[in-house]
Length: 272
Image (cartoon, rainbow, N blue to C red; front, side, top):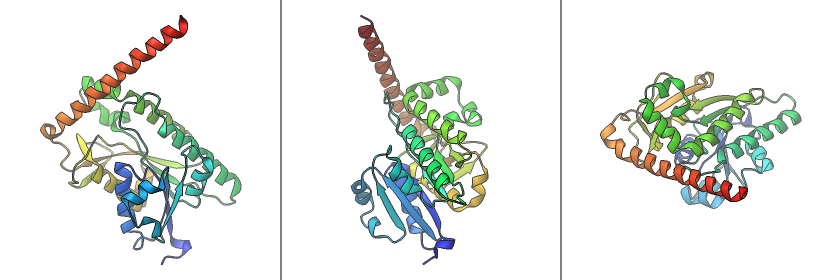
């Protein structure tokens, strides 16, 4: 076993999501060879154990359970961490979603406590799941109408994302950050991942996105990059992905219309 002096401690948020579970699986498999300690935050431990039945018996894993707004739980998750992985997020266009803001608020509050209480404290680096929609270079490659449709169809989770990542970027005294900005996320087998600051392809599988996270976690040079894209090597297959993309856009736009109509109706009733 690695001694505490040369162990890399990694705090993980979003471990039971589609991307996070890939990260947990791959890091756990490499924990001994790379001297890794995983500190995993979950809202429900049972869900994590369902995914990884023996994970709570692993010597390189500590699990912290509680509400995302519970700063003490988040503070314990972050204790001693050199790297933070955050894959929190919501795929559906749900009004009022704030899982990423809650996560960012708690992470900032917890790191403030660690900095105030620990002499010689060193700020960690966070690899944060963002979106290619908010990378000017990546978004410029899209037709303007498609970009507008995507932004509108996912306006609520995007609003949550923007507020969360803006807060984390502002607190550079507490952490350094690399935004991971993938294209459309697809459920399929991995075909190999590509990491680039210049472009993203049309899509990336959760498997390839998780593998990209793991490569960046284990290779220190990626911490110098403020933002990167991760794509599947076979991610440019429009005939394969277009039906799923437009299905999501349709349902996202429908949710947006419903939220506007109902919100407008509520305001009218409040004024009457």
